[in-house]
Structures are given as C-alpha cells and as structure tokens.
Amino acid sequence: MRAAVITAHGGPEVLRVADVPEPVPGSAEVLVDVVASALNRADLLQRMGLYPGPPMDPEVPGLEFAGRVVATGDGVTRWGAGDPVMGITAGGGHAERLVVHQDQAVRVPRGMDLTVAGALPEVFLTAWDALVLQGGLSAGDTALVHAGASGVGTAAIQLCRMVGAEVLVTASAGKVDRCLSLGATRAVDYASEDWVAAVADHTEGRGVDVVLDVVGADYLDRNLDALAVGGTIVQVGVMGGGSATFGLGKMLFRRATLVGTTLRARSLDEKVSVSRAFEDRVVPGFEDGRLEVVVDRRYPLADIAEAHAYMETNASVGKIALDVAAS
Image 1 (cartoon, helix red, strand yellow):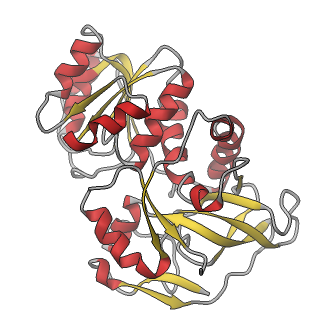
Image 2 (cartoon, one colour; image 1 turned 90 degrees about the horizontal axis):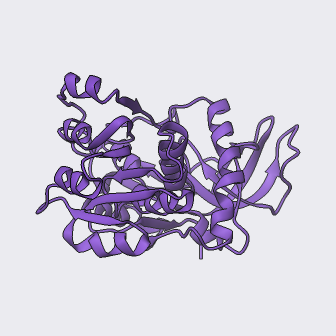
C-alpha cells in the first residue's frame, strides 16, 4: 500500500510516498481503507524530530482518518465490512490502510462525505475534550480561544456556540472576519490589539471561564490576566515555545487551574472513552447543521511535501485536507 514516509528528520523535502507493508487487524481491531485524512501541527513536529510518534518502520505520520472497514479481527462486534468510520490514531493516518481498535472508531455523520470526514476527528476531539471535558465549559460561560482560525480554533468556536457559551478569539488581521462568521463574539487581531484588555472590556473586568491555548510561552502569564476567578487554562500546544514564566501570585489569587493535555499520549482506554462520548454528544451536531468542517485546501497524498510547506506558511484557515485514496 502507499503511504507518506518520513525518510529523515528535517524540512518537507524529507517526505516521500512509498510502498509499505499493509497492517493486519489484531483482536478487537478493524482494518480501514482510508479515503481521506488531514494535516495537523503534530505532523510537522514529528517530521522535524520534535514530537516522536509510535514505533513504526518506516515512519508514517497522520493522526486522523476517514474510510471504510475492509476486514475485522477476532472479537469485533461493532463494525462490519463496508461500514464508514473515522477517528484518531497515534500515527499511520497518511496511508491507504490502517488498523484501529473497534471502540476507537467513530461513526461518520449521516450525509457527510468521507473526504470531509477525514479532516474532522483530530481538531474537534481536541477542542471538545479541552473545552468541555478538561475545562468544564458549559452554557452561559465565556471562553478565550487562541489561534481562532486554526483547525482547533475553528472547531472550538463552533463547539462553544453549540454548548451555549460565548467565545472570544485571537487571530491575525486577515482571519478575524472568518472567526466572527463561525460564531465568535469578538475576534482580536493579536498583532495590533491587546487581547487581555479586550477580554477585560468585554467581560467588564470579570475575565473568561476557560482559556484554550495552543501558543504557550509568554501567553501563559497573560492568560492568567484574562482569567476569571476559578477559571481554567487548558494548554494543548506550544507553537510559541515550550518554556514559560508566569506569576504564581496571579494563579493563587484567581484560584486558577492549569491543565496540560494531548490526545496522542493517552492510553487506549482513555481514547476509547473520549471517542465514545464524542460520538454520542458531538457527531449529532454535524448532522443537524450546528457544526461544520472548515477546509482551507486539499492535497493528494502524492503532494504531501507541498501540503506540509503550505501549512508552514500559516496562511490557512481551518484544515488542510489530504486525499489518500488513489483517484
């Protein structure tokens, strides 16, 4: 089968599409014919050697997929051949076939094309887990989401709207309007506006209940300035740097909670639990029109290096989708 392979750690040029051995489903696993996937920042970091994936030889990136079940291992009861499924995986999503535990696979929303579903799982699972399960966001709350035009950001805006919470975001000037169109109450151009002041102004000094941050570095101290008493900061990325200095006094005064989280490193049981809850509580939002997958560009698997190079420009809004199935 064809797969995107990391031949060495470095720039996009280290990526190749090559023939690799096909996986075999084990007990309670399904073999999926992958139709589509998408890029995530973790794929870029893995390519550069900064975010190791699971042991694989050769090394195939890819954290999400959508496709059809083609074979099942012993003990599989949830799925049969031909069933459309999607989900997250620790690696191997940028290949024509992969195996996943039957309970980690998620049903594709009714009426959604698999080419769209391939760009859904990672960012919506990440945003929903961070905001609702980790951050405790609920109706009537206010959230601050950084990088509002990113894949996670565009998902987070919509999820806040779905649960009845207000959401403020930071974004670059050219992406502010798109964030507002997705449901953000206020979108702050981080290059020209003080987003801490904007939060204070909008909340009349109270602050936000939950901060979803993919930036890190000096944002952490400022997130505390924007946080309400008893609020939670959920850190899901460190695009701005992995080291931070912040005021412990602020944290104590606000009785703040700081949560660091990733999906990839979790145990199978944890991933299954999140996936099952996600299927029950979030997938219906795509079926009734409350949620949509925002896709900026699509690339065929053969152009994986070009897709990585485009993501590095930071020009995209939403997801960069990957068509895996051969046309």
